[in-house]
Length: 187
Image (cartoon, rainbow, N blue to C red; front, side):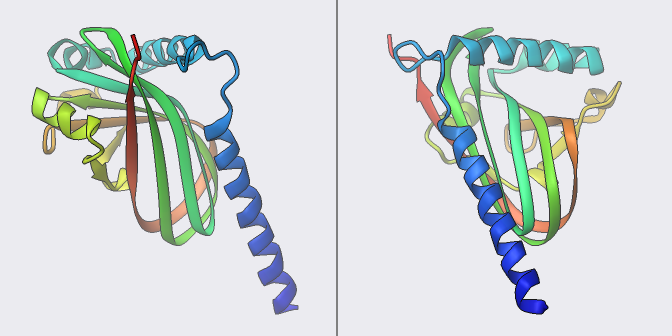
């Protein structure tokens, strides 16, 4: 009996992993490596965040730049992973694309979809992000968006992160970090 349970858990993990990898490689509608549909989704996600907390307008005005990941998929059975793609903006104009990958280990089970918004306080923080030097534990650093929450959030190491759950349920007490890969728009 125990062997069947282990086998089912491994099979579920492999299915979740394949799903997350597939999410990252799906590229319908790209033009020269740029996905205008993803930019549209990013702008719609900004509107949803602003509806939840209009105070985020202060972050948009003061930030050196920001990254918007409209859809991050996360799944786990013991070992978990998350993946999402988004757009990086500076002066409200898209300057590149970002992909986020996260691997976690610890007690966790379930699946979840969420959006993520990352603000860069200054040029130095944004430069670290572009070079792939920005890594953090999303569960520790991210703030779930609710009305008025932005008033109490301060930048940490030049970065402020907000998330908004779209669907799913996750049980976890895990350790892991998000890693980002930035690609500039090719002119």
